[in-house]
Image (cartoon, rainbow, N blue to C red; front, side):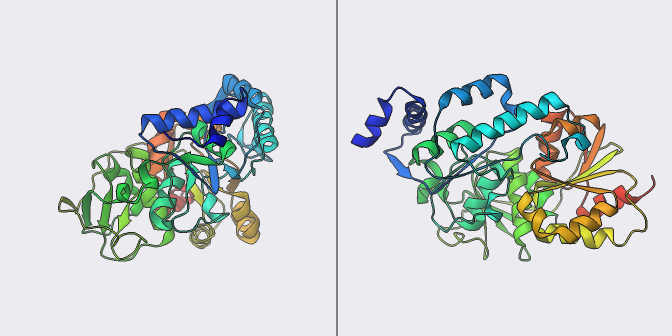
Amino acid sequence: MFLTKEEEKLLERNDGVSKCMEILVALGEIFGAERLIPIRHSHISGVSYQNIGDEGLEWLKGLNVSFAVKTTINPAGMDLDRWREMGIDESFAKKQMELLNIFKKMGAELTLTCTPYYIYMPSFGEHLAWSESSAVIYANSVLGARTNRESGISALASAVIGKTPLYGLHIKENRAPDILVKVESDFEPEILGYKIGSEIDGIPIFKFNRKLSDDELKALGAGLASTGNVAIFHVIEQTPEWDHFEIPSEKIVVDDLELEFDCDPDAVTLGCPHLSKNELVRIYDLVKRFDGKAKKTFWVFTSRSVYDEMREVVEFLESKNVRVFRDTCMVVSPATERFECVMTNSGKALTYLPKLRGVRVVYGTLEDCVRAAFSPH
């Protein structure tokens, strides 16, 4: 891989910066990148203390680096203000805050959200280094920005250097669809993505009978990325690059989806990825239909930025015993492990709650979830 004289000098420094350069050079050589390219924004995942642990914490302490570009970070393992209410113990909270303070010292914005595009909207064609799977697929597919599916470490290295190797989805021809997915029934996008992600190989282009909202595109992508190695999709007549390539001859038709979840939920969770303002309003409208307060534990998750803009909605939901948490989500927080079975409308949570939290799951639409939380049985 070609390096400029300045890049070669960074390799020779024998400090945290050179370690980051070594990571990017190794990545570039593995994937056959010709060179490094500048990025405008890095987004780092895996910042929950439970993910990183003491070894990761010590590694970060020893780096002693600063970020060269705008850098945001994923949800932590707790709501920074309401961690006791979530059932997080004090030792975990202290370690989590120590970890976040290291990122802050490096120059990261403590956004603590998997939806950084609600805070900073990348432009079409802009090169990024993002490592949150649902954010990666949204940036590539819905916004037309360009990022590979980075690891937390490679995204951090790119944030320090301000560059990423030129390979994969940074190159236009690698963004072309491989398979046409014709959707002939009106499935919920989150469960469609969850099912299709594991059944296809390559980049899908979807043909729907109607236009999807941005929230539905987000849900579709999050499901795809959680069950499959999918980092971009296209939707005919909708996403920005759908007509930049030929429609593939290989196709599948989806007219039925079988679900295999079976447990009685003792909790309901929404917000994986974090809820948008419109999604919070939808929940608000549904909750208004019910008298009294939620009968089951009902947790919803959003970013601080959305929370702050939607104070009245949040206050109403809280009055109905709906807990609106920030900074974290049901997947990355150990708080979820107390439950036996969780109902969610998230394809991503359906994938990761059993894997990461050891919790059984059952799927429900947004309406199903609200109804389950407010029904007595």
